[in-house]
Amino acid sequence: MGNQQKDKIKLIQKANKAMLDYFNSNFINQLEDIQELKTRMFEIDIKIDELEKTKEIYAFKSNSKKSVFTPVVTVDDNDERGKLIDRQIRDLNEVKTSLDIKISGLDNSLKTLKKRLELLTEAGNAITDLALQVDGSMDSFEDMEENGFQFVKDTSGQSDENHGYNILMLDAFERTFYAGLLEKDVKDGLSNLNHKLDVLSYLVGTDAERAKLTVKEIVGCSDELKDSVDNICKKINSNTESAKPISTLLDDFVMKQRDEHPEAIIDAHIECTDFEMILHPIFTINIFRLLNIFFDNIFMHANGTRIEFTLAVSPHVIDVKIDDNGVGIKPDYLKESPWYSSLHKAYEIVYLLGGKLDISEGAEAGTHVAFSFSVREQS
Image 1: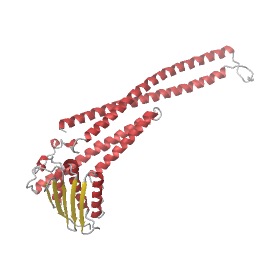
Image 2: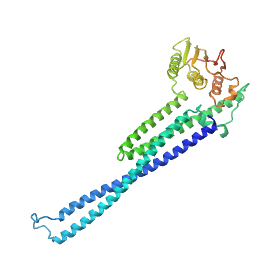
Image 3: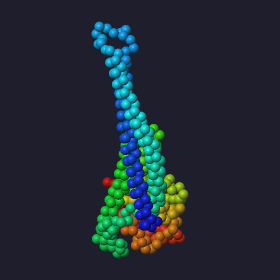
């Protein structure tokens, strides 16, 4: 999908959110108005009840219960007071009728708003689904270079200084990227959740059906928020348990890839000179950063359905080979791919580890990846 189409999706998302916020705000305001009117109705009912009781005191049906302490009150006085109370009750009932009409009108307006909110919510979900179909997770950051990021694109014969610039820029990009994810997925998700909780607090006593729908929306928002956090954690490899033996972590990695991609055949050969070997965390973390980069590329871009994965670990070196049957890779892939691409990142990670990386066309088809670097065990 081109940049123009992506911009249109973002514009639609922005417009949908603005309309959703507008109608949600109206919905809450009208709920507050209804609550205020119902409070006034309740107060009027109490006042009418008090007047009815007062009227009974003055409307004596007989004098049989009078005592010497009973004030002398004429029948005319009782009639006048009774008429006054009747007028007050009548006036209050008229106010009640007026309030009831207003509440009925607001209820009808709420029903209309409810339908619009449901439609906008469904539209928002559809737009989100469409946006997620856009290839690549870096789309929101395509203007990085225009906003001050300049990257050394010539990767052939780079000096240590150029590598240093590349590494610093990739680090800056990652910080900005994850900050953007936290802002977009987590912060916005929390704001949306808080807003729905505010709506729910008004709906509980006024609209049970809408309250139930809002509860479902809150559950959905919570699930989306959890998925967003899980996604961010996965991207930064925060779940890498570097204290475990490397052989166990590699077995878990292969099983996870098979579970997540049942359509693909993963033929894995893992060799360890010591199956209880625990590597220094810097090597453990980065080996999985590299593996995630290459496996993600196979499934997201190469559309590979068969992978041959060979990894050998010794106390001194890690040697990895990954072959797939995907669409293959062009010789000038580094020049064609964006500077912040995962393949650029892989080259810099291997450089920092003092290793070697080769990405080329497979012997028959697909892509061949081979990298190795020296390691030392956890001290």
